[in-house]
Image (cartoon, rainbow, N blue to C red; front, side, top):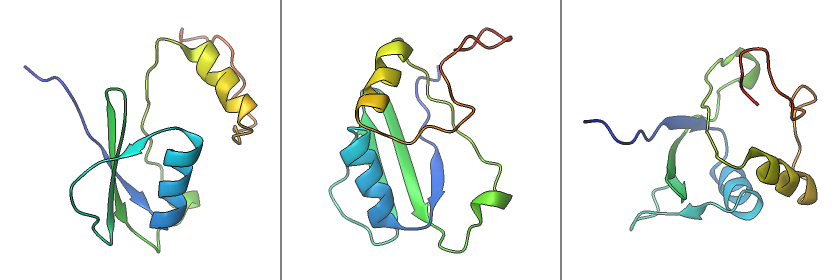
Length: 100
């Protein structure tokens, strides 16, 4: 039976990625070795892996990862309190397909 997924996501800069996820989103770095071109982070049951891809163009990359939560209202308020940039289309609202 499948229980977890740990996506590998491209990153252009390891330090910027690390700082955002750890200092802004409260993830913690995991792994016994600090690889130059790889980053592993975790928060609750969510684990994300990043690999260095300096030349990736975010405007041409359609990759996405959805992270589900059972407390979207408090998470959203936490992001606002921390002044984390939220996409202009990212206002908290019920979507026609039932997602908030």
